[in-house]
Length: 353
Image: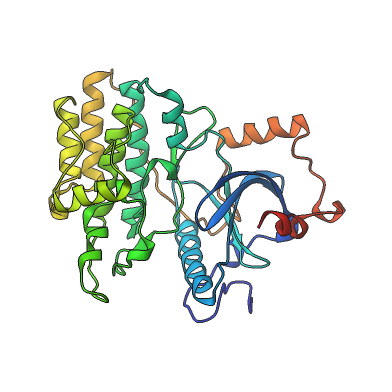
C-alpha cells in the first residue's frame, strides 16, 4: 500500500489513517447483497455489527484501474460527509482486497420493501416522510459539492424499524467540478436524468457537462414510485424507458396525484435541468404538502455532520446500538478476537471474493 493513508499511487486520493480498518479485526458473515462490481456481507468490526462491501478487482488491468478509481471516489465521499440520512461510514482498506465498511441496516432496500407491499401503497404520510429523508440526504451531499448520480430504490436502505431511509452506494458519486460524462459509469437508466445518458448519441470522445440537477430528476422518479408503488415506465425495458424519456420527453403520469405533489414531481423531472428545483426548495415544498395532510409536528433543526476530528468512528444511532446488543445476546456474532479464530478474515475472503 505504500503508506497507511495512501490508497494507490498515481492519484491524489488518500485516506485519513483514522478511517483505515484493520483487516484482522473484521469478521465476515452471510452475504446480504450483490451488484455488478461488489458483494456485500453482514459482518462485525470491533464488536460493531457492520456491512462489509468487497469490491471485485476485475479480470484485466484496465478493469482493475477503473474499479480502484471508483472505490477511491466512494471512500473519499463517504469519509467526507456524514448525515443522519446517509449510511454511516466506518472505514476502508485496500489490502488484501478493496473493502468498505459501513453501519449495518437490517431494514433492507427500499426496492425490496416496496415489492413486499404490492399491490398496497405506502400511507401518504409515510411516503412523504421517506421522501424527506432522501431529500435531506441529497441536500447534504449537494451542499458539499457532491452529485450522487445513481439515486434509485436499490440504493436507499431502511432502518430495522422501517421508519428511516438512508442513502447508500457512492460508487458513482462525483465532485460537481469534475462532471465530464463517462457513459460506461452511469447508473440505472430508468431513474437517470436524460442529460446523463443521451450523450451516447454524441460523437465518440465528445464530452458533455451536467450538474447536480441530475439528482433532482432521479428524486422525482423515486417520489412517484413511493406514492404509486409501481415500477416507473412499467412495460418498458430500461433502454426503452431511457429512449422515451430522453428523446420523446415521456414521463410517468402525474395526473392522479394531489396538485401540490404533482407540481413537485413535474418540476423535478423537467427536461431543462436549470428549471428543476434544488433540494432545499424540494424539502420546503414537501413540508408544505405534509402540513396539509397531517397535524404539524415540532420542527427539529437538521444537523449536517462532517467528519469529527476527535472521534475515530461516527457516533452510532440508538437503533444500531440496541440491535448490536440484541444480536450479541443471541450468540450469533461472538466477540472472539480475530487471532483466536482458526479461520478468519483472509480465509473467508478466499471463499467469498
